[in-house]
Length: 355
Ligand SMILES: Cc1cc2nc3c(=O)[nH]c(=O)nc-3n(C[C@H](O)[C@H](O)[C@H](O)COP(=O)(O)O)c2cc1C
Image (cartoon, helix red, strand yellow):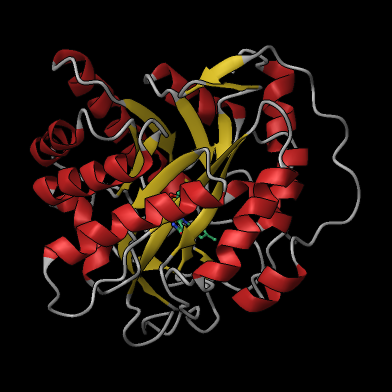
């Protein structure tokens, strides 16, 4: 059983979570490092997703995760998709990050080998109204400790047929709101794998991504700006994206969950009609995500771009995080694993205080 009860609704988890009994033990002391100019205890964190509100941020900050990302917010209230929202993928599913394969849901219950699992999420990027989330972001900022950084992820909600300008402006406005509320770093999610609307694959449009980054930069001044990017299997569009956001964003977060059709044991779309595709996370996408980080780091070095790469995707154990740092990641974040293993940061710090 994890801190997020996948048998309960998003609202239940928002109000009642995180679910955890017992104690994780002390967080090992670590020497100070820097994260975009902020002093931090480690460059290990939690990506946008699991941290639904300030209560979740406080719990994971105390568990030693030092980069804490507030789950993506919008400019207006948006309900969550109906449950189920999170499920495990069958270990024998022929999923491979690079192939356009389908994913098959695992049988009921959690797979036994928890440190090597693949899962899928379909939430639809719900959001509280701005008044609520801004007040809660301020509380989250209060809740984190010294050497920890609060990142707030946001996304525009473009009306059907609306001009790109409106969306660009909205991303800028949201960044300004996140900063005003207490975010130390602002993030734009350019890549939700399970929404069917235009905000889901902005990262595939390099010029648009560049304009969004510029609008965010204008809104927040010197505050670090991060862009969450989806999986780009080909090198040329990845390189084009990096060049387009260079000088505007401070860094990119690679990679969001990989979007795939997800089927239940009956062969039907698991999450229901209209939600055929969902984000795949965990071990099954690790190598694909790691490859993207490696490629991006190489391009940034070759083209002398002023960007840092935050690595995400399939980090579940020390050796996974090590692989990302070896690939040149500036920081490493986790999406799903801290849900059922909240002691991960403590274990990382015990063996790698230099992270
Ligand atoms: C419960 C859950 C909700 C998520 N929601 C968001 C979100 O709102 N915005 C976002 O950018 N990514 C979201 N993600 C994706 C994660 O940030 C991350 O990219 C993904 O889980 C891959 O990392 P992992 O393999 O370590 O889980 C979510 C992930 C999970 C597990």
